[in-house]
Length: 146
Image (cartoon, rainbow, N blue to C red):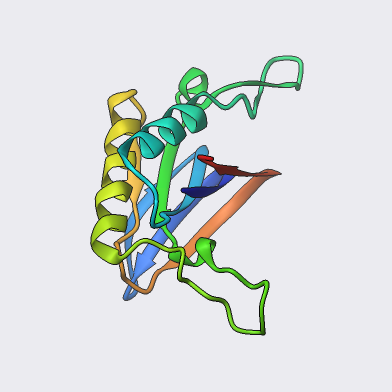
């Protein structure tokens, strides 16, 4: 599993001119699922991301987590994060999980985050989406489960 995490002041996802998810201060998570990923990988990333200390404390230091700040999360499935561009000019997506498995683990990740008490909005799996955000910082982190 690969995640791109962006600290945001706000973010939204639109499908066919309809906003389907919108958050205020929190995290935008772009999530890619690989062939070899399992439920424990989703659980690991959900725990890691919600506890990642990338929000500022009273002294301006990145020392607080999403859980500590009460921020929200918006999660967008993005298989292109698994694109391999080492050969040629066209990305290979051979490492990306098939849609059924990817959706199952994507939903498992979202469920795990919600169980931690975080308000979570989502994109729409396999839909063409427009993702908007106001990056806060900017702060962008890339995480993998392995």
